[in-house]
Length: 180
Image (cartoon, rainbow, N blue to C red; front, top):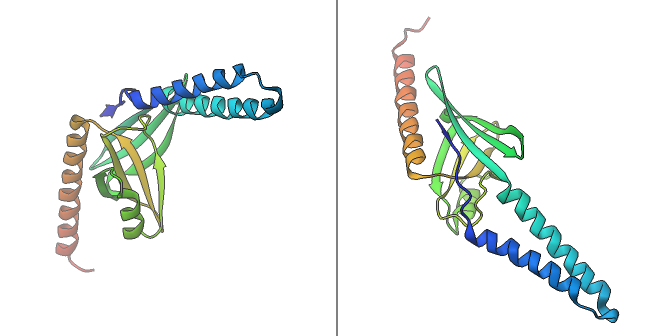
């Protein structure tokens, strides 16, 4: 199942519109004594606006859950313009935490999982539907921030339940197997 969140972050659009406006405003100020300062401020606001535009508005993420034999794989496909590539891959069996992002989430996860790295694969910066998925990796944990809707979240929860059932079945089969 694939899901591509919509670009609907009005706060972010207002932010980069203000930065573009400040660029024009700083370029229009005609003060010879502080011209260097206004040109520097114009360049900083222009670079910030273009960065926000490219990183959040012109980038599209697609979350892919692929069924693979008795398990599922989770991919994130990043598309910028006509180029797209998979930026991460995790087996769903390695998922250790799925929770909504709030103010203390990063600190809580850093305390719980000592060696954790955070990645953001969401193009809505101020989104109330942002979730964080923590996957175990070799010797550390990866936490990725994603934008999910209710339908895709319920599908992920079903996959988690299926994975737990499958893991429990494998554990039971392993315990019942005769020792050789």
